[in-house]
Length: 182
Image (cartoon, rainbow, N blue to C red):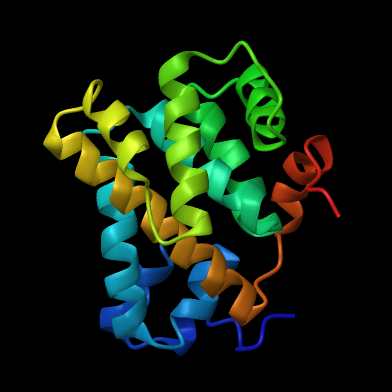
């Protein structure tokens, strides 16, 4: 059970009920603070719908953060979402192997994006050599979007862990298919 109550639409003020249009456990917890939920959701909506970053690469970066954080919630949700944006089972298996420093057949740009996510997750940020390599593939807008995606999801996994948000039953099959290491 989460550390804060699950909010429901009927518990929210009418002007805040839109915050649960995507009625997932994370949103039900965040709406305990409607203003915070709105701010959080705003950046999430930008990342999902307005970023110019290739959506497959975006999802691979998010999955890399979820894998490193051992965030069952983030990992399971973005395995499902990743499928919708072109991430394949081969990509997911390659991400897992890349995380263990194993060689894969993943395309070089995807490997570079995963490396950037691993570096930023480990801190303090993406290294100069990796950033310069990314510059060879992305314009400044895409570079900023990638860094923002990675950094935001580093925060998301910490929110999920701190609030003890649990995987909903409908996302469990994705976690079962690709379980996180112990």
